Amino acid sequence: MTHETILILDFGSQYTQLIARRIREANVYSEIVPYNLSWEEIEARNPKGIILSGGPQSVSDSNSPHPDSNLYNFPGPLLGICYGMQLLAHHFGGVVAPSNYREYGRAPLQKVQKSLLLEGLPQTTDVWMSHGDRIEQIPNNFKVIAESDTAPGAMQHLAKKIYGLQFHPEVVHTPLGKEILSNFLFPICGCQGNWSMKSFVEETIKKISSQIGDGKAVCGLSGGVDSTIAALLVSRAIGNRLTCVFVDNGLLRKNEFTEVLNTFQKELNLNVLGVNAQQRFLEHLQGVEDPELKRKIIGEQFIRVFEEEAKKLGKIEYLVQGTLYPDVIESVSVKGPSAVIKTHHNVGGLPEKMSLNLVEPLRELFKDEVRRVGTEISAPEELIHRQPFPGPGLAVRILGEVNEKRLKILREADKIVEEEIKNAGLYVSIWQSFAVLLPIKTVGVMGDGRTYENVIAIRAVHSLDGMTADWVELPYELLKIISNRIVNQVQGVNRVVYDISSKPPSTIEWE
Figure: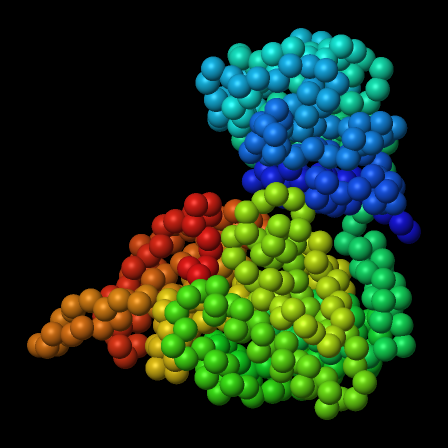
């Protein structure tokens, strides 16, 4: 079954990924593409509807992003959000100008004319605004269907299925935003809502079979949910022509290599090779403190190890990776004019020259969707609910140089955090909880003596997909237990601090 698609043109909004999430939650497949995608490529995707995202620029700026002009002749429904609405107004002859003051935050929206887009909403509802420009005059052949205190809040074409929203329906601060998007998807676009994890699994296995054909593949396993689910999908597609490689890069958690290798081989029945490359990775990381350089070095070495192992296995042409959507979005601006936040080892950290072709079956999924795929293919519950672990491992949880001494300190502290979070029954409900080794030492007192030792930071966050996150208000008693255990049991640590930063502005990992 071919799924129906809603295309989202990304003009650089921090909320673009949320639009995709909301649409998928309605069981309609959505794909984010660059704003300047050619009309031929847009047509080839056969979208049921197209959404123009928000963006940070002004439509009248000389360097502002504009789509292929053929887009405006799209016979199907168009929806412009924030900057997207201003683009529609600008193109069709309206007037967009800087507002006297920026409208940011919650605002009341008043319906002024009947519209299918706002069907079922009360006369007045709260929405989330985030714009500096306003539409001073809507184009001919358009009507205002809702207003905010300062400007038209929504508009639509009198004859065509072209709509604009000055606010962001995708964020939780617009309480009825899902209903608005649902109106666009179903009565306006005519979607059926038939995209599901079951259909995704079926289609993905077919795609993998087609891509690899009679060839062989090697999969780099990290021990986490993403690479494991990717391996299980590929295994279903090509069977024993998949060989998995689990690399001990020296940056894994305590006892992780042995425990995970046992799970892969005995519980999941995957064909897995365990490779000890600890010394190799640590030698390349010696003296390196820059976070981006760490990630690139680790990415480079991962690929080299995979290539070397693949050569030993004979003719292998494909490398399977558990790359996710947030990895792609944060690593490189392939979807639109968004800022590069940090390089992920399995995306931006790839060497320029590789002898293996990439197979990334989860590349367009968010983390919670991957967990749903795991449930669909009957993966073990313990695996499905395992907290995310970064590809570069403990290297990005050790600020500064990575060496065996510092790794030992962090492993012991991190194990205590994991044990106590599980003992408190919070492991599954928390997105991530872990320890970070800071590059500072502080004075302490142990027994009758003065100490000058390391500081461990504890990080625990709630999130849906890793794109945004809020710090967890862990019970004081739990923090007390964790702190006492780390200071008393981990040699070389005399202080524990708790990170109360959210994402944004911080990232989940410290590097």
